Picture 1 (tube, rainbow, N blue to C red):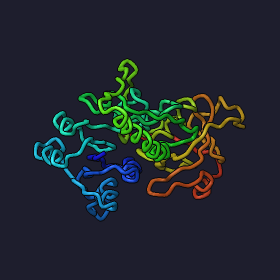
Picture 2 (cartoon, rainbow, N blue to C red):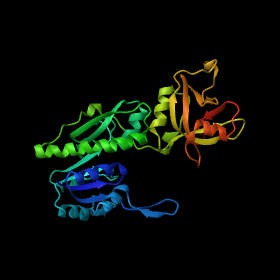
Picture 3 (cartoon, one colour):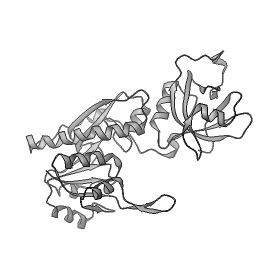
Length: 321
């Protein structure tokens, strides 16, 4: 099948490789324009565009895919269908009708749950166990079109959003290939409508979504840390021995199942002992890994040793957020 592939983020790269390996004809890869990045302000193409160049696939880097001149360009490719993955621009009706079979989108949730920009993060933060990938036809409403294929997986107990992102990027390969197989079996297949009454939202994350509170239950605390790792990061401040508050990011935590704190109920929330056990609303969590501001992620033991801690410290929610 001849495909126009619209993608920007790294999430799309495994599927792009798989489509080529499966014998599909990628007419072009459409991506966001190259941007300046890093301290040196080097102009860098998106991960999807970089992958396309390495594979010898023509690329189009465009600011507005709904511009009439761009839509005419797409028509001239004489492709059959479009596939959108982690693209970053809304697809308008004229572009959708420029391809005979329309445009499909790979989404990292089990639609209609978690429609929006950050489905992986919100699924973890809300304590979901099942998740997966869905391929649906793009319509006017966000992530609301009929479904062509869906694959489910289980979120790991300690899996972070970054780890799940990588795993769903691989799972999405079979979801996209299955959706394309639908058209081989029946070119007129219209997909299965979503049940809008079951829809939930997954809005784009803000930096402030990473701010951690210690007056919540342990499971919610752990889910929050996992869901905002690696970005925007679980942000807190650490205070020890009368020192000034030090900004930190908690990168890996787990529920302390058998805490040995004496008189636990008398311990203030946010207090952490030398072993890294910190008090939350209904018990304790273990700080496994922590990242100081401007530093690398390290074990709690290395963090404590580096600060020569000799007594309990305290985590607090950052101020001014």
